[in-house]
Image (cartoon, rainbow over all chains, first blue to last red; front, side, top):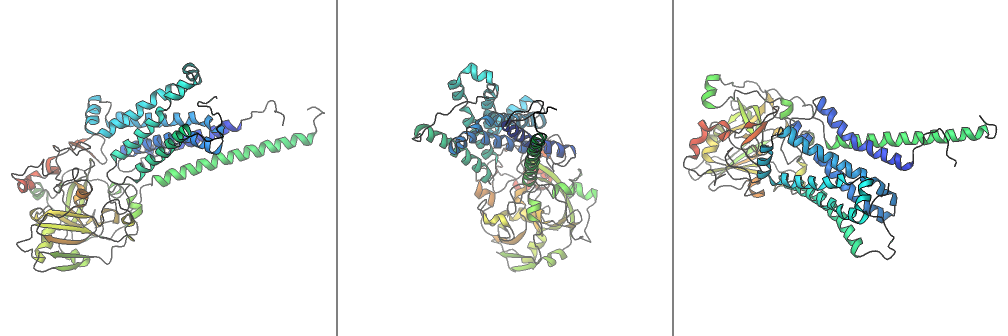
Length: 215
Length: 323
């Protein structure tokens, strides 16, 4: 089919990205709308913290799910969605941390320090967040080139530590119903196990797979 | 424009593009709707409360009386919408905003409370009989072990009035309480989140204290399911989990009875669990709290502000060890 001049056409990939982008922002839009119409329940701060934290974990999990899915189902183009998912994980992580430091601690860093000392799960959460920072910084094409594919890929294995720390952070704050945190931990574990399995016991018809996105 | 292209061909492409655009719009709208619905399902909206039965002939306390007895806290009362949509009631749901939805339609009639154990006159009391006991209004602070608090206008009667009816023997030193065990009516009892049924306990002198009440209502009406209908314990100077909900059994016993959260985490939740800003929970401080509806955190008060009335119960006791 010939390309039509003067017609703005969107590739399938760009459309898929648009769908993900839109859907990734819907929870934030709903959260802000609920805050604005004062419909966030009895403890708005807790609600905002929990929602942004949960979204961070969801996007982290989706990000690390890309490679196993891509390899299992042989859909290489999936890798082109990974950066966006990872950046959304970081985005919600920033909102989560900001909610805590801004609204819960009013930018009082002494109070933050005391709180971290008393509640180890906050420290674990902070570690998870700071593990994501270098990944967000080096997410651009330029940085991938500058680091070189191998080193970039090595650095970005930190995402597994971030995801594991995130799941642990969630598990540590729950009083007794650990079903949801365990689910996250389980999924993260399975995805990591898949990567290790493929690495150390590669399938015979091992195709060369790119470790980093090209787009 | 050009004659080289057949007009039919142009139309075809337009149709094709339109269809493609339409499909894409549908995908975008469809996924957006699905995401919205999923978000709403995971974050249930506050439930508008069904009207309870009015509780008549409720005795109110005067302000002068209140300052001495602690029966009426002179602080803004937490709105009913918050009290009924922010609940810890794991038998129904472990999400605080989900309990109201999960507990909707919980049948509380008929209901009976068995009072037994080391007593001279063990008896099963029908709920209606318990409602015959003079009902009083008590406006208490409620401090949850998680670090939030409310002020709730309960209606109920002092527990000692019930205990006196069964005449505890001299061997009775503690009182054990038990929540209904019925996985069909309390769905989460099908899962081993906690050891069911939920059990709690008090020392006999704590149970006999005039501040300790069995609540049957709040804000002038019977209790909604999510707040422990039809009858629950309220011990205002202890963390909220001590105030066991939907009680079916009260036994007088000689030894300290097991309590659910203590079984769950012996180093985190003690038998006494008196509100104490100086003894931190292993995973968080108890020095301050967020009063629901307020922005800034409040200092947590010793015995939740009821020290004048209850401190003497613990004279000479090491409250750090007996947390």
